[in-house]
Image (tube, rainbow, N blue to C red):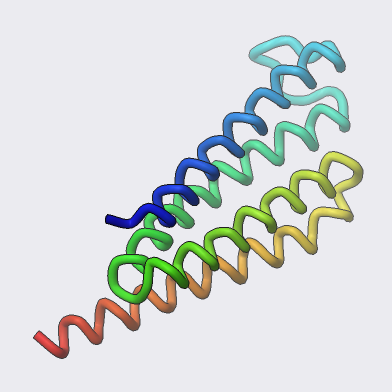
Length: 130
């Protein structure tokens, strides 16, 4: 049905799994034991990548699927792939320094806004045409 959209969804979940594993590894490396959530700035950046990615996934996945259904699965998947690249750049940059996260954040934020706006237009056009 929508194999490319499904692939982007699976890759998004895989990315989130890797980012979550990185938090566990950072806990051990920086000796930040649960339920502690702070204490080492390097750990806090790794944790923040995981938290922010989860926050973004809540918006991204529905927007991806709505866009793919109402506009185009091809374009939805392409924009979704760009979102993934943005999230990887965000994580990579943030792991190094908080200031280096902005390019990735900008790429993924712009991508999700395009998906959401396109979805709204597609849904409205679908309603008007029916």
